[in-house]
Image (cartoon, rainbow, N blue to C red):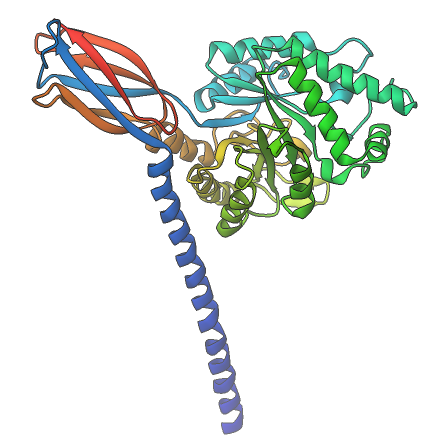
Length: 436
């Protein structure tokens, strides 16, 4: 009996000893994560805000002290985005209206689809009208559009010929025509998608791309897009962040200058969020190219995977996990000076990629907790709402987030003067009012 008690005690002690390092490791992980988030918060203040001064004078140029000043942000410089693939695709008008309304309330940036296989189902009949309607909606709501992707070997249009030279001519012509047609409406493009894994889909376009070689294949399409719209922002986009992608980008230089204007990095996290340290290391590694980074396709799901190809519906536990991680991911990226844009993938669970519960809103367009959490950041914590009084010299100064602001001066008699002001990244600015 004593021996059995001793064994139980020993086993219990062993279990206890095993749990202590586990708790210590978790505590260390949490502490490291909090440290990274703290650093990100400091960098947000450093890299995403600048000093705005408001100077109030009378008509003679003398300072007007003690007047009330309000500064209200009206748009972000940073691009918070999402793909907009469900635009005009929902059969229920109420769902369509809710989708558009919630999208426009959250984002200032969107991705429109140009997948060749779906965009030009019949040769010579691309979906230009649909794209035009989406671009016009975005223009009215202050949303910048990006096209994705111009070139990808994922799937072939059914009418595509077998001849490799003819495929090349068609691909080049497609890029030239689309970029030129939408100039001024769409001036950002994911020109080539996933050049690190050409041929894995066993398509004719993949066979052609492999025959040409990844670097020439990408270079040609970047050059054609540049000719079609010299002012456009051109990206290469990939899901890999390991050496093969880095090597392709390194090779896409002329006289030391990259042929691309920004680097697209996908971050689909269907199996769980990246460790925060990985986010920072990835940004550092690709920030060395000295061009902006766009996180082009970001996903965290809120429901279980049933098997490789099927997902369960969103659920309360998944939504809590999603809402807990996503703000951390955005905080890390918003705090890194190399990052210029983040695009979520997809906005709603309805029609989401792989059928996954990836949205910030559910299939009925009701907001998940992540929507509310991100609104509190994008239009709250990271959104300027400031007020104060001018000093004796008629001046008020404060730090504001880069972007557009509406500045209002209220005089003692009740009269108001309002002007808009754009504070660009890396700058400080002064807006002068002459009143009286």
